[in-house]
Amino acid sequence: MTLPLIQAPTGPSTARRAVLARRVRLLVAATITYNVVEAVVAITAGTIASSTALIGFGLDSVIEVSSAAAVAWQFAGRDPEAREKTALRIIAVSFFALAAYVTVESARALLGGADAEHSPVGLVLAAVSLAVMPGLSYAQRRAGRELGSRSAVADSKQTLLCTYLSAVLLIGLGLNSLFGWSWADPVAALVIAAVAVKEGREAWRGDTCCTLPLTAPSAAGPDTEGCGCQPGCTCCPSDAT
Image (cartoon, rainbow, N blue to C red; front, side):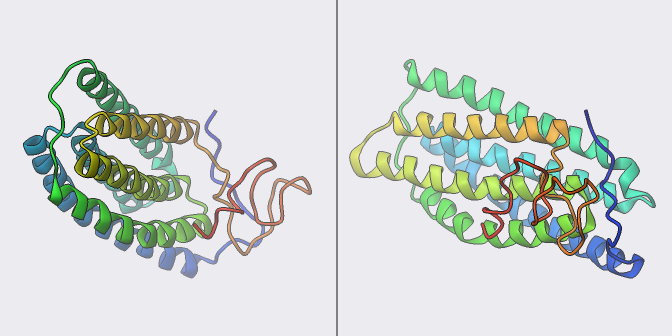
């Protein structure tokens, strides 16, 4: 069940919320720009090399663009909170679509499809994304948490997912290039699909684990943890991610 935005007793002021909303919009714009370039390069290189993992990575970039666009649409309205549920649904469905496509293509590759070839462009792209995405994700997550926006946090998690997928892609392409292990490519793609399903489920539920303002006490009572997370959440230990 989707819950309303969490209202903390000492949340950000109106002026601070305006600053945070503007920051989210700028970060979303940067994410969209980078991912458009990333998608074009990855899908093109993946098609040339018959790499399911690289094509899946490119499609993930397309989905990140749709996710970021959903957040941009939300914050373009006069009442962003009213649009949040729809934005979360768009993000979740995007994850599920990616997982379905990559799973089918990975199975096809493992059951006798064309072997993936060496892709130097893919290796460079994965390394660059591994360096760029953590900073974008961290900045948007902090702004989203302080603002109390689940959709901004969900989108930042998708950007962080791209960091993990960049590492998986780099390993898969690297093993194929160094040792000729063509099976490493679809296996890496299946990892991408599994993570996408997990993130899609969290977005669909409207996971509020890490959306409480950083500087405000929780409104949920004494059972919440000191970092502002709900009981049982693990966002605090990974906050520095």
